Length: 78
Image 1 (cartoon, one colour):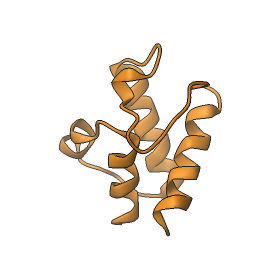
Image 2 (image 1 turned 90 degrees about the vertical axis):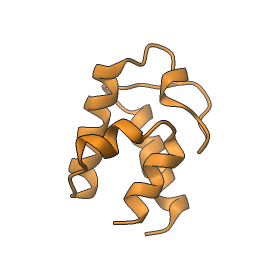
Image 3 (image 1 turned 180 degrees about the vertical axis):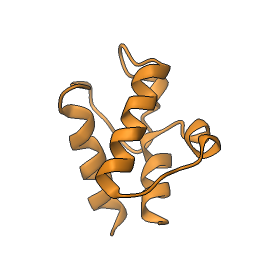
Image 4 (image 1 turned 135 degrees about the horizontal axis):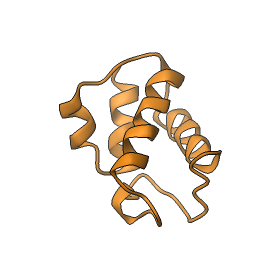
């Protein structure tokens, strides 16, 4: 799966319920800069991504993900 396709799917997930992110997003977008984003939202989103792409990441991987691009790289490297 290509990075662009993965990024598009991640962005689509962020824009859907229950996340409903409306601000512009790029690979450099930091989750901590998303309005209303907190550690609970982050965990919920990572679990959603795992389910969508059919894999599990370690807690250490999840903690290291700071940007949307970081997450896309994890998914592409599967």
